[in-house]
Length: 151
View 1 (cartoon, rainbow, N blue to C red):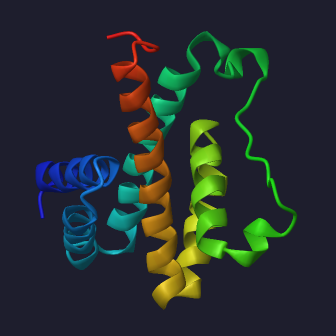
View 2 (cartoon, rainbow, N blue to C red):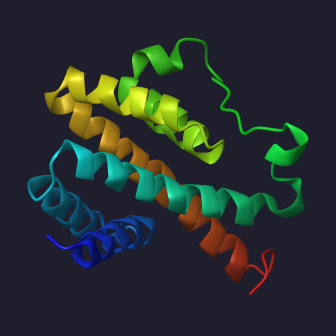
């Protein structure tokens, strides 16, 4: 699979998921998984997180954390134990936050942990990351349609 094909599939997965076309999103993600080794899948996760980071910055505008001032993104566990109860969701939130903060060491450690967990947890972690970013993209599209974001 070429880099352009990979990018196209990532865009299709995010766009389809954001528009509620779960079947197309799943097919795109499956094609990525089948044609990728571990290194490429880490890159896929980073590409998905790039879209999430961009969308977070768009949604928060001037209130987005500014790393130059020492501010960082953070995730808050609203219900105690929620991350422990859902490792895939925990991976998605932690990976997106770490990526948004430029913390590549944590991103790699999270990915390697999910990879070692294997099987359903690994696949579920990647799917949860895609779903989290798709929800952000959907929110941004809705906010833009409502005129609350710049055109």
